[in-house]
Image 1 (spheres, helix red, strand yellow):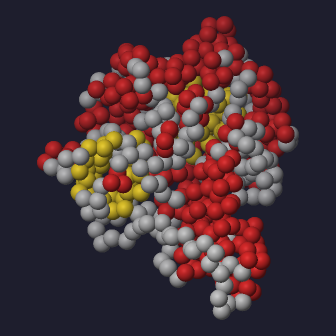
Image 2 (image 1 turned 180 degrees about the horizontal axis):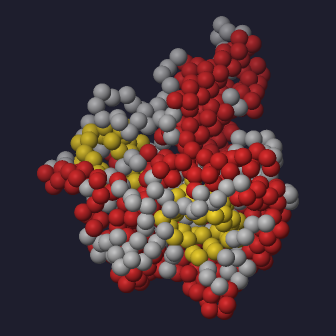
Image 3 (image 1 turned 120 degrees about the horizontal axis):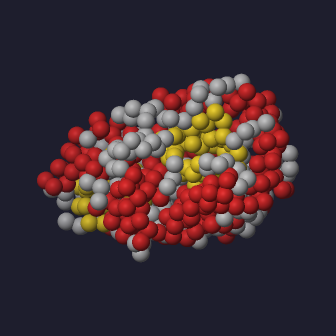
Length: 566
């Protein structure tokens, strides 16, 4: 038996045969030129290929059942019809007499290299461009479009990484689990796997060396892959199946065994998400991503459009708390009317609250829309700004919310500076919410999209836990100085890890917000511990030397995880 370990990103245990993604599309021969085809006809064929690929991706988007999957496919479809890319390729056809597949390959490769040189999110977009390149070249050559292998029986899919469009078309009825040798815990692959509830492991070095057809055991919680699974592995799979009932039921109340209340909220991004979260029993919304109103547009949506969309979400949570995050544009969410895509490092650039410095007015109009939506519903609206780094930013945002008529201002803690000055920040706002994805990235100075840095980009890192601890201590100091009750929540993916949820509560976090799929498992584990135990486990985790040791030490003290297959 061979055992490999990667980073588990979605819990689940399965046994199945390994099937690899097909080999990537081969590069057309360098210097491949037109033969009996006129340049005009070759350009027309290129445009027809682009239209066909775009249409196919749009068809898949319309058939997708998950909104995130549909959005990824729509984005890829737009890229397939990118006018600048096609114009560049057409110039190479007419000026250099290149065959359309070679012209397209060169144009897309240059474009991808430019994106990769920018680093951060832009570097990740390079993979999307290469995916579109492969699809267009395949269409031009009359070959099957790249995609998930078609098998008669369910299988474990492995790849170096998956293009977003491929991940978006995964069929959980056929793909038992996903294992990649690259990618990171916050990559498109990881996020979509979580949304699908598909057992998944990323950054599993060596998995590419396992032959197709090999039977493997996959544990998406521990990140383990074992070849030649036997009776022991089958029992682990059976235990996972048997515990499904305990994981699937959430009674709408997050509570510890001693009665300590820990409200479990949902992260949502659309009215459809909100309805699904309410149906899953979420006690409110801990993160309403408002970007859905802005993405894919050339200009800012009107206040009236925003009011309509926000109202549709708030209506699903009458009488409950809904934490609305103002527009988090920039980095992985560039907007042509608001952000500069040429920034050398977008993750450290003008994003989130900072955009109000460069394009003032957008934030004020959004706050007006949020206030009007609150007036039209019975939801308890809290509003927070992303990417806050200074006390003065928090103070200014609180003044803006008050001017808009919003009563409960807060900020995201995503930067170490916000974590260590939380006491000062909380003199001006009523709450903070820890965005653990970015907080981990900035604390560890590790791009969260890079699989090679997956071990650093882990919210179990003791340094990150100390940032959480610092934030909670800051809230307590602010309260002691007369600021009044101050709430500390977590809305990053860390909250959906049942073991880490216990640690966060032990550190003093008041509320946890996650994908609705994570509610039942987190609730089940929280019910198994009292506050004293959670505090002891938090202290244990903070004392460890690494993320791996912290997770292992805590998991060893939570037997309920094994009982539930987590």
